[in-house]
Image 1 (cartoon, one colour):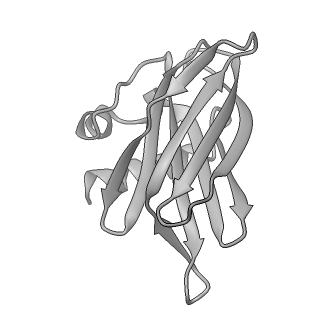
Image 2 (image 1 turned 45 degrees about the vertical axis):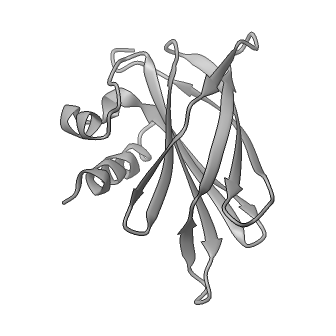
Length: 148
């Protein structure tokens, strides 16, 4: 199994735990899928293979842009993703997303620092290639360290 597929599998498993969040927002033919989880949910091997840091103070945000295909199913779309995270006193942390592609799958991953039990509000803008329109999403989430 490839490293990215393993990473995605681990991320999906993380979605069932209390310390993660996942969601989808629809924009006509497009959907933006997102998930947030502590970097410690990744194995050391997966983190290293994807150049990600593992720490109790680092969270990971994963964004995927999808479009309804000709057959009615969802297909991944490339593009750009940018955003920021704000804590409860409105301190801004800009997110440096990087694009990961393997086969047809396209993901945008960013890491950010957090304190355990800190409420973070995420403001993300996805721009699908060739669309010319922004897809803004906003959500809040709190991560907890493994030992809390």
